[in-house]
Length: 311
Ligand SMILES: [Fe+2]
Image (cartoon, rainbow, N blue to C red; front, side):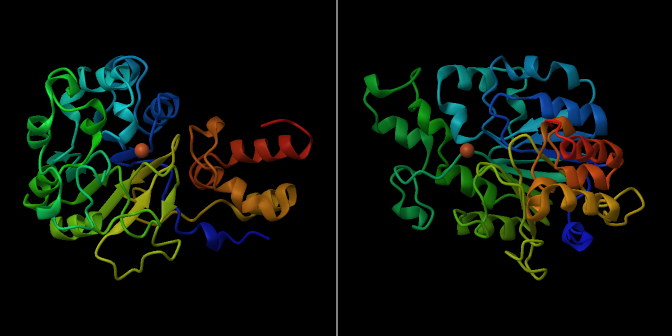
């Protein structure tokens, strides 16, 4: 039997949310467009590894009049010149939050795109030991033929330089920090992200890169005493913020009869199915979708599966 308690800490699917944070799109913007059309947030933030197949403003043309689009870049956004150009050459290029704080939907949002690469800076080492403090320093060390379009190598345009990090570190306080790398609560997270979050005094850290939807507090990987709340967001999925519905109450989770039905259909795998983002549900998990205004659709899917349908 699946207990509704297991879902009590799930963030709501997005109704009345001011901000939606989207996990790494990797070229698939259907879940982004569907969620914006459904929930109409004031703004959205893409958490990197965007890899738009056309310029980003073209890919998101259907929602540019519905919401404000912001992003950070990820390591895969410098995989090819096409990935790079469709992001940094897009009409939305100035919406990159990397290395700065911008007021979005009433929140001060700080951004740190890219990943740590030891050839540039291993953040476990003091900044003074970093091989390259800034992109300018790296460029000056490169031979002309090593440069890409006259600047640093394409790959390192998604590396985190100490100068970018320190610029944020010395900034004014912020409410939210969005990063591609994870905080230390993740097995592959970094203390440097936690230090940045604490110094900025943020209440929330949201990251991409690891393709996992994780509520670190609910999973017991952080305590309620932690100075900030942290979430990871899977590809094709989103996190709505602020949590709670318009009346300020927490999401109550899916109806019990639906949890019972899921347990009947999937047995011990019910929880895994309920918590895995589904493309028929705008990339949301069945649990989150059912906790909102979509229990009927989730019930229909379960019934279809129960009677041999493919969903
Ligand atoms: Fe990534």
